[in-house]
Length: 365
Image (tube, rainbow, N blue to C red; front, side, top):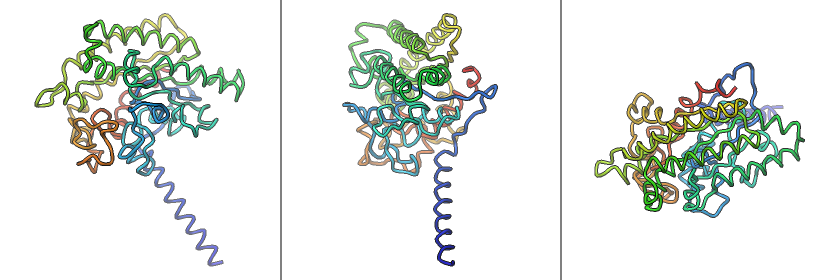
């Protein structure tokens, strides 16, 4: 009897430890109360590295991060999954907020199960953009192909649960689009190709035309609850300070100006599409203002460092340049807004997602 008691006690200790680990992982991500007792069957995401949980692991591109120190604080530590951060990314956090699940998997994850499909996936690909040239230059999945994968996903759902159940999942799910930073930061600012063809207003027009095509096609294949993320204050991320901010690494005014112009046009596009598709709930999600506030008032949000990332020097390291051999990687990323020179830390993502999404939840219903 004593032996049995000791064995049960040891199992209890393991159970308590496991629960503690789970609590640590998800302590900052809580489901938000939905209006009118609504439930959301799935969260489906399109976009770039901000919401890519590992699709790029399974394609031929150098835009990858499935190695340490990425994932250093994910699920108990040292689990690089292809997420461009030290831990969770906004696609995970949004899925949790809508009460769907704690982690949103990549559609191209070879270990994907049926239940994963039924409750949503991310089709996002790090390095993608509205501009088709952006995805081509990075050898990643363009928005057009992300939409093709969604159509493939719909067929898989139909085979699994039938047409009626599929129709409910597709129409009542939450759709998130988060993309465009790489268009400004890379394709336009760092390449002569587009700048020789377009000035900033006309290039943002090109981006908006592609956004319009995608959103109308997404509506055409059944999406009704769609949130569209604006561009962040891209000129203030560490890599852009290094590339365009001069010797003092100030924010790049030209890139921030481009982001503002795009966001104004995106807001107008969403308003126009609301009028065209009255059955749809289209929601503009402003990330520019919250991130700028975080950078300008770091202590208010519990941060100390805003102008460089935690990984390496924090000035240029991203993707392959941020690796286990990067010197001077910080020991406490929670003090940093940015994990690498381009992507925020899990802590910053969690705070930002709450500031961006929480007061917009009702607009999806």
